[in-house]
Length: 314
Length: 318
Image 1 (tube, rainbow over the protein chains, first blue to last red):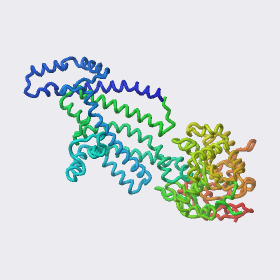
Image 2: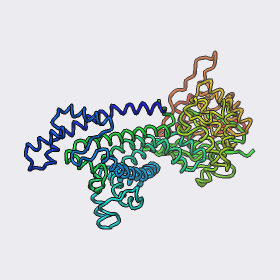
Image 3: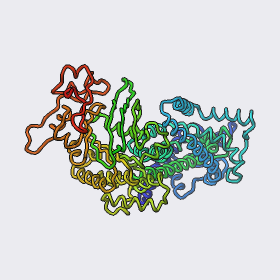
């Protein structure tokens, strides 16, 4: 098991390396010049050129890349071109917001998707099942930013149940923090809830037909136990894959959600940085998000063993 | 002697998109306390569905359309779900054909064995565990205290079937429904599992309904035999009567199809089992019957007593 984890961590290196190259190339490929953004449209070409020199942007791209990689390897993600604050400090400030948002979105989507998926499978081909399918299609197809705006309009502006601006950290004041995070988390988690629910339903349908489920019933177990112990544990492994992949969608979706709900998280920070062509920040943030995503998937892979003991980690 | 379990005029229909299939069509038979009853027939003869009906576990899209299943003055078909669950696994238990897929791969043997015990009896975890280890020893599983912590995939097919048997007999049930318990096993393992079941039957006194398509298995183990074809019981009697004096042409065909050392060329029954969606008129066996008469094509055959406790469903004995 330990050997497996170690091996997986070694595999992370090329993955993260690829991400680094892609991020670096993409951000340099898109038009826009950080020096120009910083100095404004009135700046003289000489001023812009001078700033570019000062920022090291006039060096060849590969040189810039290796310089950056070299620094990242020593734990130095550089400083923001714009604010001069170290990137890592900014990430450390903002990531907890994103983490609490995505975690809450994950919890919400699991609370919704697992019971509804199980129920739909048990009530296969009945009205409830059809309603469920309709609901999940809606959940998958409604765009997050639109739903976010709609939620803000109805629940915050019209009904006044939730605050529409501002932010209180959940780790400082849990209940107050929850009020600020609930709408964004639901908005963000809805898509994942729909996808995972469909996965739970289909793998439950498959498992419920299997012989060991009949065997569990023949033992005299209650239907609750047959479904939620014997069937669900087996049906959950495929759903877990989806959850791992969908967590990446949550991290990506957080960019939009944080912008719509103006939450001071990594996503919003990233959007601002992209607009400013703040290369070190964009590179640092995306690299960090990629790292989180791969680590989450490592955890998911380790969890498989719990749901399916036949899996061996070698 | 009052029978322990009596199946009366059982009808099970499968509602498919191609129509209603009569999987079990007026089946009558019973099992006495402590006896081993062999139920024989080809695949699709309704023998497994009958056993599943006893526990109320007929799979979708099957539905019990009529009849009664009497067990200790109660009709299992009319029992509330909660009462029926008390019978399942406790008084009447079942083992399945494929030990490889009948145990839940996600739980340890201990978890699956003690679960049945703790569902039906209020005993401590430790007691349940001890009882389970004892039972595993009884079904000849070596080093049971260690093996009980294994997951099913750690065990061979034969071992798993022993675990299934151990589990089924944990609560000293009155009846064990054994649905092709040896079919999926290697021949050598088959013999030892059958032998085990016979010994347990003598020792614990649990009646066994041994469902099989293998007449050899029945000859070795059963006291009485029920022969099924296309959802009907076509012949039933003591094992000696059936093997020595088979009356129904189908039973005779089955017996002639058993290979014997030094025997003449193997008999091959003509035709195949018809689909239960398109059963022929009259006797469902007539297209394959070497002794078919015009009457067999038109009318359902009658149930006739040929000797004491020996019956057949055939026009030959009119």
